[in-house]
Amino acid sequence: MKTILVLTDFSDNAGNTAVVLASNMHANVLLCHHQILMPVPAFYAGGAYVSSELGWEEEQNKKSMEHQREALEAIIGNMPTDHKPGLHTICCEGDLADNVNEIIKTRDIEMIVMGEGDHGFTSHFFFSSEITAIIEHASKPILVFPSGHVYQPIEKVAFATTFDEAEIEPVHFLTSLGKLLNFGIDIVHVHQSGDQEAKDLEKQDSFKKRVAKFNFDQINYKIVNGKDIDDRLQSYCNGSDPGLLALCHHQYSYLKRLFQHSTTRDALSRQKLPLLIFPTK
Image (tube, rainbow, N blue to C red; front, side, top):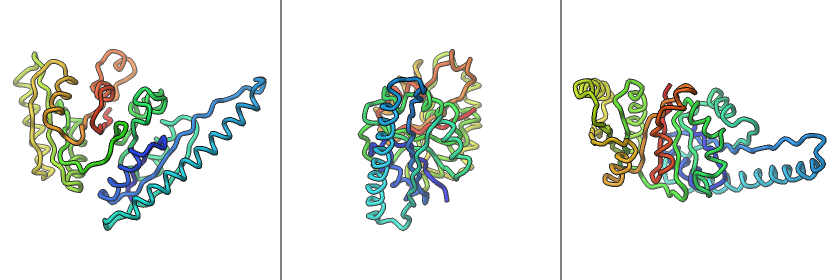
C-alpha cells in the first residue's frame, strides 16, 4: 500500500495532517525522525560526558516518538472514514537525504511531508544542508506545512506553471489527488514582459491539450502579468485564497544552481500556505 513519509521533529502539524491525508488517499503513514549525532574524537577530554548527553538525547527522542505515535493513533481511532491508515515509525542516523532516498527505494512512498517546526524556517531541522539536499535530490513530491498550521479541507490548489513538459506529470498527480480530496486547481502562469507571445501561446495550447486528457473538469487557467514571479504568485494567492500552493523545483546542476533564481526558495522563505514541491530534473 502507498505510504506517506513524514519527517518529524515531533511538532504536531505535519503528522496530524499526514494521517488525515492518508485516510483520504487510502495510504499508510511512516514517521521518520532523524537524529543528528556529533562524532567525538577518542582523545577529547569531555568525550565521556558528551557520549552521555547523546545517549540521553537518543532516549528522549524515543520517548517523543512514542508520544507522537500514541497521539496520532488516537486521531486515527476517532476517524469516521472507512480507511484508517496504518502507522509506523523509524529513527535514522547519518545522512538524512541518503536515508530518505533509501526509504523511497524500499517502500511505496507516495509523498514526503514535513513541517516548518517550532522555530521557523531558520531552524536547524529545516534549513540544514541535509534537508536542502532532500529538496534538491528527492524523487517524490514534498509537502511542507508552515508552523502552527491546522489542517482544513482543501478547496482549491494553485499550481505555478511555465507550461513546461516537466510539469505535465505533476499536474496529473494533482488531478488524481483532486479527485480524492475534491478540490479544484488553478493553473497560474506569470507572464513576464519580454516573453515571446507566439511561443508562449503555443506552449500553453499544447499544455492544455495534454492536461485535458486527465478528465478533470475542475481546472482553471490564470494568466498573471508581472516581472517578479514570486511577488506575483504571492499577490495571486493573497487574492484568490487557495489552500495549497504547488510548484515544480528544477533540480539544476550545481553550477546552474549558483546562478539561477529559485522560485521554490522564495516561496519557502515567505511561506504562509502549505507548499507542495514537485522535483524535476
